[in-house]
Structure formats: structure tokens, C-alpha cells
Length: 416
Image 1 (cartoon, rainbow, N blue to C red):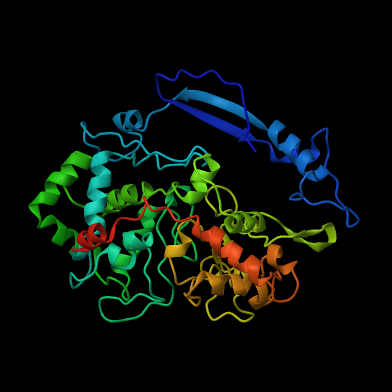
Image 2 (image 1 turned 90 degrees about the vertical axis):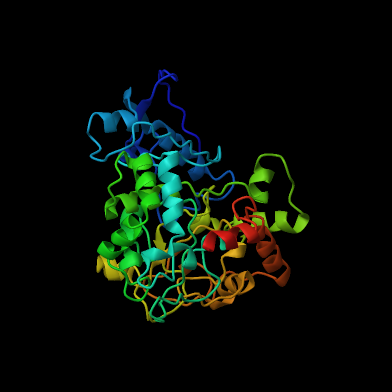
């Protein structure tokens, strides 16, 4: 839904607008929501009374608060962001889809053209690894939407990892990183693979020393941060800036939504299946994908157990939180560019989209933490016909953004 709030803004200057949400009002508003076991209602069925009631209450629960001048660069000038920035640094204008929510970018690391350029240089620099053989791009290649077309990555010492390399796109909208969410920010995340003994296996001190030995880097750090000094925190900030601007919103799906293209009949059928609940009681026979992969980001949940196993070899999110309810839960990935990011799942067990769809049709396994949106379905999953399975895969392929993926020659050059 779109929430409209009246507020006076001066568009010629920076403004920060705080929006308050009274969650209690959603359920206790004058139009009170009451549910019972006998309720014949669902929030996702077209024209259902509950959906309209929720919409009305949610819209009234928002309010605009504390409109004040704000600029990341002004904050830096006042010393409130505690990081150097070059006085002539160029603000980076991040362009996103009109349908995407506004990302909550880090206020203590404003995007600049110089910072992004430095981050790009570092991302492809093999000197961040112990033997100078691997860069971040080795396991996150631009041509595969910053993923790797193999089940597990091989580190500099020949060790094999235990989880599939995740795609790196639209990260500005994420609030945790890695499959288990152990890093709260990109700045924290980017330094961990460098130090991981089964990945790049380098100390931060050695990585900084090797980068500092390249005199050109001193100029780049000065351009971005106002000082030629090279420290690991600045490396992390530059990499964070580069990754934050890797946004993908120009697929065929987006062009259809903008009225610039049309789906084929098969793609349209897949689109309907994707966004329709499986609810035979009410005559709905969709694929029910949207609960976990809804919205313009195609990623509407943080962590979930999607029925891969009934007994867990990898406890996932539990290893971070130590909560029993998190056993077997992993980060829910965005489905944008999913056709080019095989293999799939946290352990890369599925080679094709067809195998993934088959899992949700007949392969799901029950366990105590299975996501409720999946547990409600029949044993095995949502039964789809062969024709509907093909349609669903056809729709998923419309999420590929060719402008986001560099041509092979450019991608290969970037690795050198």
C-alpha cells in the first residue's frame, strides 16, 4: 500500500523526515480487528474484508514527525559522523526503482563517487588474499550477479567452504548479511572473508600493508576520505559504498510494470501463480511464492526454514542467536537475477530453477521450525501441474536484469 502523509518540505535543501508507526493502533483502532478459529478470512485473498480493514488501520497508524534539515555531508562537517571525507568528494546519486522503498543508507558513510570508485578497485584486488590469488570478485563475479556458479567456493589454501556464495545485489535494503545473518552491516561483513582461514586467509594488517605499498591507492584514499592514510576501517567503508550501489531494477518484469513490455502468455501465468495463495478451500490454486519473496525486492522475509531437511546438518541462524526457533533457518535471498545465480539454496544443492520449483511441489520436509507459510500446505508442498511449473520458471526468468550484468569481455577484464 502507499501511505500519504501531509507535510511541508523545502525541496531545495536537505530534510530528514521521521515517520512514526503506532503498531497498537493497527489492531485496536476504532475499526478493531478480531479473529477467531471460526473466521473465514485471509489477508491475501482478493476483496477479502480483512485485507481492507488492515489497510485502513495501517494507513491511519502512520504519522510524520520531526521534519528537520539533514545532510550526511553537513553531519560530517559538524563532526557527528566521526569519519574523514574529502572536501571535494562528489555525492553519489543512487538511482532506484520508483516502486522500491527508500533504503536506510549508513549516515556515517555517505556515498561518494570517489568512495564507490575506491571500493570497486578494492573489490577486484587479489592482494586482499594471503597469496594474492583471490579477490572478492573471485567468489562474487559480476557476470553471475556477483555470485559463483559452483556449489561451494575454494579458498586460497584449497579448503572448500560449506555454504554457497550469495549474490550481491540490492544490499542497501538488507539489515543483516551472510546466510546466518551474523553481520549487521556491510562494513562488518566485507572484512570477514578476508580473514576467514578457509577463504582469503589474510590478516587485516597484511592486507593494509599490501594495499599501502601501491602509491596509487594513497591518492584514491585521499580523494575519497580526505587523507592518504590507509586503514582497515576505510577499506571496509569503501567496499561498503561499492556494494550499496549495486542495484538491479531493470528486468523484463520491471519494464512490464512500467508499461514498456508485456509478458508472454506463459510468463503471465507464472506471474499469477507466483502471487496467488494456495488455498483450495477458497478456490485458489497458486504457487504461494509471494509470502517469502514478495514486493519489488522479491525478498519479504529475513530468515526462514524452507523445508530442505527434517534433521539439520547446518543449524543456520541458530548458530548466531542460539534460539531453538531459529534452527534450520537461513536468509531468504532476493529472486532478482535468480536465473543466473545457480546453484541454489544455502548449500547449493539444486542446480536448476526446475529443481527448485520441484522442491516446493513435492520435496518439502517438515520440522519444528518449518515456515508457517509452507507448513500449511499438503505434505511435500504445493501440487502444481507440469505446465504450471514451466510457467513459474518462465516468470522467474523475467527477473534477469541484463543491464546489471556486464558483457563477458568486461567481466573477464575486471578479474585481471
